Image (tube, rainbow, N blue to C red; front, side, top):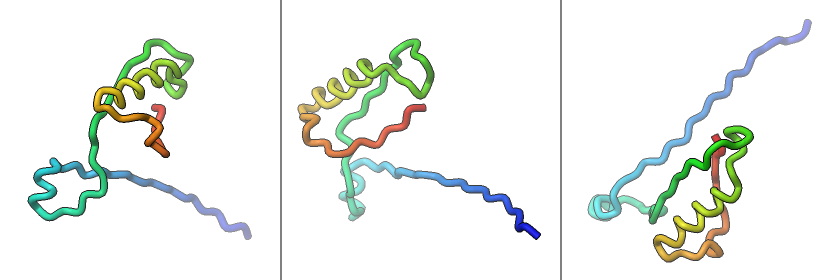
Amino acid sequence: MPVLFSLTIQGVGCVVLKLLDDAIRDGDVVRSIILNTGSNQDGKTNGISLPNQFAQEALIKATYAAIGLDTKHTSYVEAHGT
């Protein structure tokens, strides 16, 4: 008799943010520091998972430039399109 089963997979990702001064004061391990963030809305596209390439590129460049960073120093970017 075949074995039938269903598999439910769920997951969650969590980032706990704390002001740098508070983390230092509390003796926390600081693994990274968020220097800047950016967001945009690039109008009508072919779908939510297909953002406008040029608008996204402009946003990334502007976000880096606002704090004087060069994009060549970033080796990895994790992004989600929806």
